[in-house]
Image 1: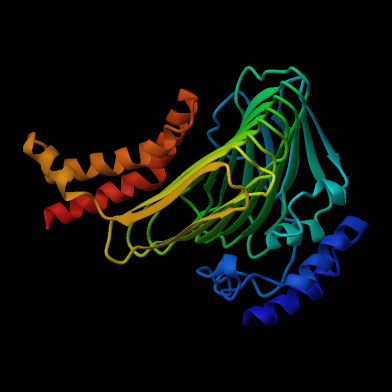
Image 2: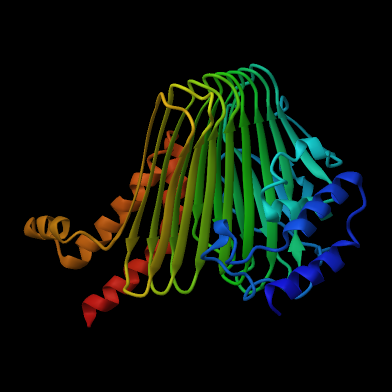
Amino acid sequence: MNIQELTDQYISDLGNYTKSQSNKEAFDNFKARGLPHTKMEDWLYTKLTDVLPENFKVTTQEAMLKNVKVAGKYQAVFLNGKYSKADSFLPEEITLEEVDLVAEDANCDEQDIFAMLNASAVEKVINITVPKNYVADDIISIVHLSDFEGEFSLPRIHVNADKFSKAEFVEIFTGSETKAYNISSVTNFKIADSANISHIKVQREGLNAFHAGSVNADIARDANFNSFTFTTGAKKSRNEIRVRMNEVGATCSVDGLYAINGEQHTDNFSLISHIKERTESSQLFKGVLDDKARGVFTGKVLVCRDAQLVNSEQLNKNLLLSKKAHVDTRPQLEVYADDVKCAHGATVGQMSDEEAFYLQSRGLSKERVQKLLIHAFCSDAIMKIENQKLQDFLSEILFDSFEKEAFDHLDQSEAK
């Protein structure tokens, strides 16, 4: 089926799920846009006809929680997209409730196609509230475990951080290594005055899965949002990140690392909007690709007309470990104010011969040098996370999911 035929089929199937007024509003948006295709500016390098199922159906299959390593002592668990209260435990001060979707709270659904798809069919939203002045004493993990075939799961989480609160969330997506499941997730943050929230997304889905995940944040006066997107899984994935600094003094960092191999494909799209003056943003996205993997980075920074005295910097760096790996990178600035400080850039290349020669001249083998350079390249991104515990957590996943196999390739090449 081509993308138009798929769109028509999905529109027909979605009619069975649009029950509430909020569902219908999102469905109308989806019908107007249709499924993404490569003639859309923000989807130039990612086609979906090879991964999307021919019919849209929300899974009703049951799953059980398996061993999933988490970063802290608290967790909220979703099994095949459904919240599992029995497997979850959060701080007493933080409230979690299942509520109906309210259109005004769906702060991403007019631009993000898969968020529209999610909101067209989702039954319940998980609302997490971090109360005023509360500082979490440990990391809060949000675990998504998928174990189904050919259908979609639609987890949707809205986090409301009240004034002066502080918390770190690690959202982990994992699932069956053999099943071709599909996930369209939405995680929205509303961050009140002077709150400080970190969100680390860890996407290590099964290698037959399709993952479309949206993260959105609205940041108030003097509040801070730190986002890190870590991708090692899925056959094909799309990470969509939208951050809006709505009031004076808001700050954010939107960083990430994608480390993929085989024939994996990951597409990372971000839009950072400076809506008010005296706001700051920084972005470092790095990619390391082996075999026939393909990566896409589209990073947009928008500075609105009244947003003077803005400071923004953006950088995308990519390391290719094979001749068949490929990256498309598009850092973009759209500036309508004149008193700003903005910079952006991108690089794509292989390992530095000069760095390798220097290390080899110090007695290290070529194979050892290559491993060190790969690890240093990735660690540079992970170090953007301030919490040492989280750095160690991601480094371990990086080794298990990517570095171990990449290093084996180097050993085999050296043996030849």
